[in-house]
Length: 316
Length: 244
Image 1: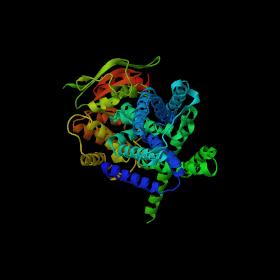
Image 2: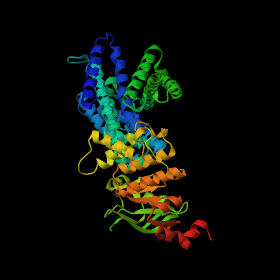
Image 3: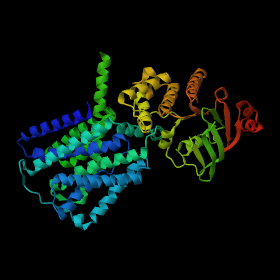
Image 4: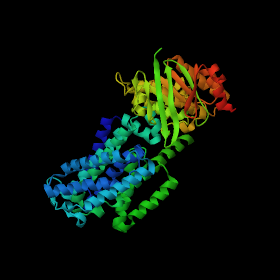
């Protein structure tokens, strides 16, 4: 499928999904669906750097929370419409991604990962001590109860996140089939060989951190309006990083379908567990699933399906 | 003939250890040069300095009429300097055709002038795999290859960048007699097509039959440079290899 066709199909699927969602009588569906969609964006964004380029970023929460806190800061300054906040949040996190990339991409493997984790801690400390956005007390956001046409505000946020999911998936898919995607994959496989083949590895890695960071910031920007109260410990929660890494691992890291499947699967289970048992179980679920998948399907759900298809074809 | 590669007073240190000291040599366009030396003499370090993987602290490298000091490895590749690695470094997750596609996309298509269309890229991948005798395996992955096929893939990937100079770093280590002849024949074909070749090798039979000129490194210094027959009779070279 060519890129424009894919964008069209993805938009149509998104629109159809939204149409069907409107038929659901329960408002809580949108509340829970928002979180699952948010993880589709985060997992897809993480996978651009982690899956395609091979650099494991533990600092997801930092990019996500920076997007959220740019919205908080702007809310105090002058309330803006959500789509504008999304763009600004994306820009802020993108710039931070570029900066982080520049500082840390000379590190490889575990050292890079540790540096990203450290960056998340530094960012959290900075925000906690920044009084303007509420400091450690947190910040309250007053959101309108209704929006025109859609009615309920949560439905509106759900739609925004759905559009962001389509954009994130479209971006990931376009990268995969492009010159950029081949470059990323060559860096993941062997950086020295990539350089010898003419790939400007540093520049490409900066593109990856910037894109990945920007998408995470975009996912975070509507958060204050969703939760209405945001404090640093919830915005920078480690579970964002754990989930965003676990979802591509469980779904599959080599293409755009993996993070999507992983986020839908894991996100939905977590939302179900939250209402039926307890949200305290969420990280336990992630842990158990990760262990299970490492044993049964080390290449994720997508890898497992590919293997089964190949096996079925060989039997014939 | 004008020199394609000119190395002047090149030096490289790792901490207090001098890996290379005051290396001078030049390679003419179209030449076949063998670079030999005992283990640890600095051959691979020299290759890495030439290709930009390592930075030399002193001296300079001129390639194709311009100084390349300070240029990153990928920039040197784009100028026409290609290498194969001592231990093959294939792109493991990609098919053989895609392994070749990377240098085509990032070297050939990154240069000024006409860019290859997707159809031309496919064609070029097939041609290069054909050249090294891997045409039937275009859709396989590197892990399915034998050692000698892996070396051939390395050479095909280096060739895809349309180099003027090919630096083959121990492309034959660990291969059998007939496999070595395979690789030698391949390198000769490339040389006949006008590509200058620097061959780094331990296997003397291969070096002697291929090289027009030998450069000998011992302990980070160049101790000999000349016709193969003369160099191997040079008492210093004999001493370095066999002892006194």
